[in-house]
Image 1 (cartoon, rainbow over the protein chains, first blue to last red):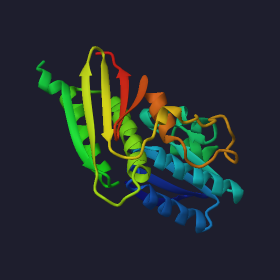
Image 2: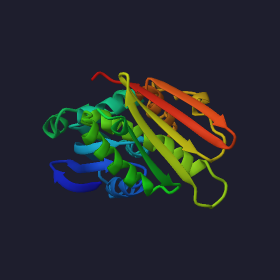
Image 3: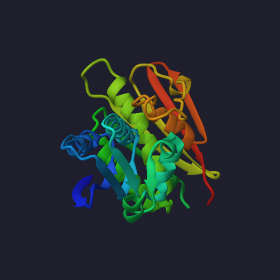
Image 4: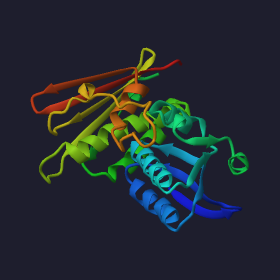
Length: 109
Length: 142
């Protein structure tokens, strides 16, 4: 798992790559929460390079979503690979997250 | 196809880091069996969810324990047997989470076993003596 933060207009874009599983979900949570707590009000999680996620990773997505909602901030996801989208669908996460086909669409909405 | 290649097994100890070995094992198995990447990832996922529960909640001692993972393919299906000597735990009896709740209402966690049940076609649990057997079956089209 690797995360990269880039600033794009009003958005803090966190690019997450590789696998988010039980072995590294804690690290992933720390990295994303650091951006949330730095005061970013608009965050996009770019999942184009996310290859694998387990319930430990889904848990982090939900925690971040709850935190952003409590702060009245905005969290968007983009570019989910089909296998990841399937897991989001099964978990009911597809209906609680704002998911966009790509970063451009997420920024434009 | 020789029978030998229709069964693969892996022994892991009760440490979370072992999930990295499981991922490598599933990668190799996916290549060897010619599985679609998404199927290999889903098999990895259900094994991770089951193992995580066993490793984190299955033992009330700090000893080293061996958990056996056996994958078998045949008759249009792949089955996974996970055998551990942890506390008795029947995941098939767990209640499913409500996936229709809003973000605020959704409890954090509790998705692992649900993912196993949704991804696999059959989930069976047996306790024999002091051993838990979890048998997960997925129908596949060859």
